[in-house]
Length: 134
Image 1: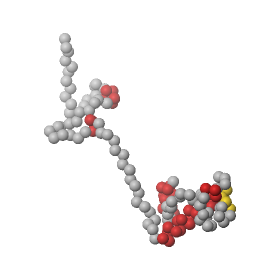
Image 2: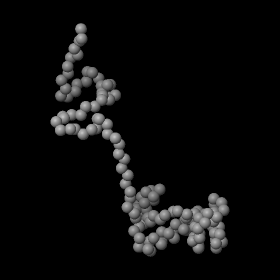
Image 3: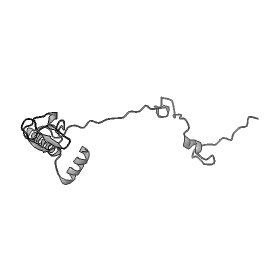
Image 4: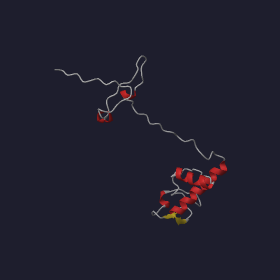
């Protein structure tokens, strides 16, 4: 969702500020009091301290807006460094490194090798005639 928002904002020349969303639906946009009881239902928001009433989604949007403005005015970096994840997989014998003195890597024949036509010419390969055991 963040990447999509950044993409759309960049096309319009807008700024995207990421803020922590934790407890934004339980925090009052007027007095900043945070409690789970501020959400009597999924759609309603009623602050237990100041009595502020609003739609829960609208109140949470106002809380996130205030957090973004505070971050902008505080001078904090607006973007954080992205964590990159690398996926390592175990390399089998067909992908092992060539040791000194070895000229090629042997691998098990694949299905494509088995289905290759026997009449197909391979460049640089000298075909041997099958020897009979009789």
